[in-house]
Image 1 (cartoon, rainbow, N blue to C red):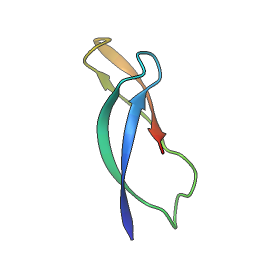
Image 2 (image 1 turned 90 degrees about the vertical axis):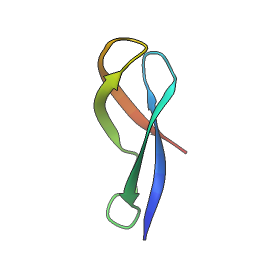
Image 3 (image 1 turned 135 degrees about the vertical axis):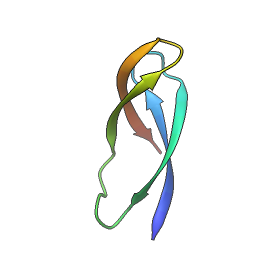
Length: 49
């Protein structure tokens, strides 16, 4: 079963993106490098619970 997750920027601490993930396959928190429009650059975004 796939679940919605929220991704938060590690630099500005704003919640910019939502995504889906399979809890059974990846129980740990996801980190993705995505564009932050507030910082105007690519930063690491971490999953928030």
